[in-house]
Every structure is written in C-alpha cells, then in structure tokens.
Length: 473
Image (tube, rainbow, N blue to C red; front, side, top):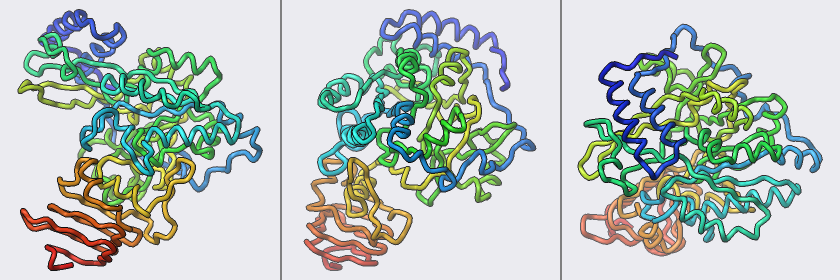
C-alpha cells in the first residue's frame, strides 16, 4: 500500500472539512470519524501499486470449483450444528425508484404475490424448521430504507426467524468546488447525504453493536448478499467447506456471459487474492483473454465474524475508494464509496468459489422480472428454481423499451407473462401489448410503429420472427 502525504492545500481542505463535519448533528461520532478518514485517504492519493511480474493465475486451491466441494454432513444434528454458526445478512439499502416503485426495492413483488423479502424469510424459515436451527436474518438498511423496513418486518413477527435491522453509515455529499459537506450549506434533506457503498457493511455491523451480539451467541460466519439476488441462498456445501478449512473470507464467482459487463474477477498476488479492478489498466485486456479470468464477483460473500472484528478494530480494511460524481440542484458533488469485494485481500485464507450460474439471479430491471415471472422458473419453498425443460444453459437476452421500465407499466402490458422456455432473445420497442398465453421462441423482435398501438393476440406463437406492425402477425 503506497500512501502519499497531504499537500498544504489538501491539509487545509481537510481541516476545514473536519470543522464543518463536527457541526453536523444528524450523524454519529463514528460516522463523522469514518467519513473524515475516507476523505483523508482520498486526498492523500493512497493507491495500491501492483507489480505485474507478481501476478499469477489463481489455482483451484484458491478459486475452488464448486463441484469439488465435499458434501455437507449427513445427519440433521450435524447440519443443525453447522447452521447454528451462520447469520444471513442482506444488503437492503436500495430503493425501487429505477423500476418505478417507492420504498425499499426488497418489497417489489417478484412472483406469486411474494416480495424479495418474503422469499428470503420463507427460505430461512424452512431451514430453521427442517433442522431445528436458529439462523437469524440481518438487514443492512440505508437512511433511505430504514423507516419503511421497520414497518415491513412487523409482518414476520410470528415467524420462527429472528430478524435484526441496522443502518449503514450516512455520509454527507462533498461539494466539489470547496470540498465542504453539502448539508453544512443548508441542504439538510436526504439529497445532502449518501450511503457509502456496501464496503461499509463491516464497520457498520461493528458500530451497530450487532457484531458483538452475534459473536456472544456463538455465531461464526455471515453470508452477505444483495437482497435482489434470487440465487443467493444458504448453501451447506460452501458453509461446511469454510468451517472445515477455517477460511476467513469467501467470494462466490461465476463464469461470465455476454450479458455480464460489470463485476471484478480474481487474481493471485503475493499469496493473496485481489479483484481484477486492482490490476494495472494496461494489463487488464491480457488477463481478460485468459479463460481462467472469465469469472466475476456475484457479491455473494461469506465472512468470518471474528476476522471482521479483528480487522475493523485495527482499522485495517482500507478498500479502494470509488469516487462517484453526482449533481444535486445544479451543484456538482462527490460521493466516496467502497465495495465489500475489495476487502478480500485483508483476510487470511481468503478463497473464491466458482459457483453455478444459478446462484446469480439478480433482478435489476423489468427485463429480469420477465424472466423470473415466466415459465422459465418455478417457485418451491421460497426458492426460484430453473425449469429443466430449457435445454440452453444460459437465459434468453431480453431488451424492453422504456414503456416497460416501471413495474406498474410492465405488468399492465402483459395479460399473462409469455412462455419463453424456448426463447433465445427478445427485443420489444414502442407501444406493445401482450395477450394471454403468448409463446415466444428463438429470436424475436417486436417493434410498434411510432404512435401506433401493437397488440399481440391471445395464444399467439411467435418463432424466429421480426414484427414491425399488426400486419406482420
């Protein structure tokens, strides 16, 4: 880790910032200290310098193929013992605004009237019932989702699952011009603040008191995942492997498809694992051409709780800072964020596990909702299971026009979700409406002419076809 010292100008900036932050009554002392520390690291130009010659392809010992994992123990008493070491933590800070919904994204209905959160609770309830275990659910909220989530979790109070909530940090946005906090200039509503990325999960878990409480209950591992990833379910083989091998950190990675543009991959460096985002830019393309690196981080992470406590208390989790420029009411601001995946290099015996694609099923847009609401999947005990009738191992690519962007509009345009088991790709543009019982196969493009409504009739079967108006049906 290379650390540059602050210039006199930056020292002055930081001093003024500290004074302004000290006056902010809306956040805790921990949050103030965490924020100032993050800004100081950013101003110092602290960076990770990687020596190309030391980079190696990860072996199967450090990026373990899922199929080589030993099966979990046989007896239900042994499985109960394993599960009683576990906590499930879902990242629940995001809003459903991009999909046209108000409130936390986790309360969008996914299938059969059940929300993301309903499915998560049902899954853990079933585990606890089956094995007599006590796996609690933690929800890390942001200030955007906290109040709504507290009301929502009330409905689960009679379930056999302990649900705990805590907030990730609330940091002030920085005004680019003078590097002062936006709220100190009178912008005290939500627009003045931001949650600093999911890398904040570790200090927030500690600051909330939840970390010590879980350790006192004998919990050892936390399984962290995005609340909108329907594939992120508790996996006994993975948990058993980590417990047996005393791994402090595990990142689930999965092979890339053409649809995957985001997500870091893993490399070996100086006996530790790093994400590819930390590889020198001029070498990234060389790495991307190597088959072994065509995997990416699913953001399903398994982390040892004692290791989190050790590293947070030592202030050792100095993940790469991601500057995220924004604009609020015409004012240019900066958000400094970190990602939980970048923490991998600070943990001992950290590994990746190359998992099946089924463990990565995120719902980021209505096109993903179409997949999971279709006959491509079924729902069993809260788990979204892929239809075995589909021969193609990858899902169809789906591109829906802006008319389908909001969940309400999306649902109103389908009398029922079409059958897509044999679909390769679908592109829909314009004012298109689907009847009931429609079947789509192969490569399908449906484009309505400007200003003209295009209705797909009930029971239509469309295979390998381009439709540019009602006359093509």
